[in-house]
Length: 202
Image 1 (cartoon, rainbow, N blue to C red):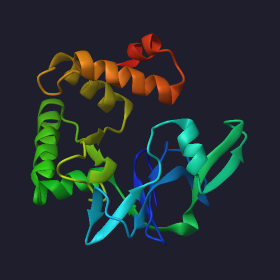
Image 2: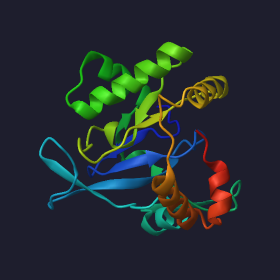
Image 3: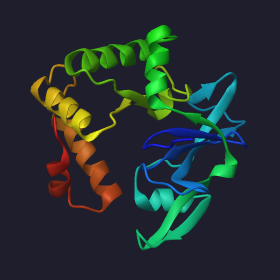
Image 4: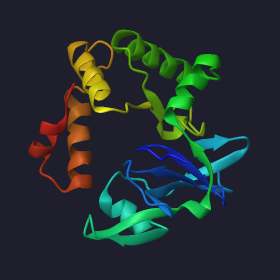
């Protein structure tokens, strides 16, 4: 099996993990468990099963805190969260999900995701993949966002340039929303808010 960045994996216990990066070992992938089944009602569900979001913030400390498995990897000179291949029951490919949406959409969030996929692919010749909670179809129509991923350096550059030149497609954060993003990103990365804003591009 090939594992690329932002693929999702379903584990034997029903939990859902996120793959990080595209370089992995034979016996494990670098990644972390993000959702696990729960008896409690949550925004994320499918086929009558609700999922609890374990990693609530996108930060290294949050991922490290909730990592089920970790391993020291000399290349990174630190303990890295991993998922053993032996625990993987199913692989979710973002590009396959985009193709699946071409055949059938089940709700308004999937319809909007397909619209964005068409917008990008028609104007750049690049098919983006769908990741996030939409990938394993546990998304909430009212509260989930749409996460797209592009593979390949040339392909990524083409898409980024298209979005930068066509802000009507993906609206930039404005005023309060941008400030909210700056504060959140600053907390999760440990960087000053003014430094974080340099990485915002749209």
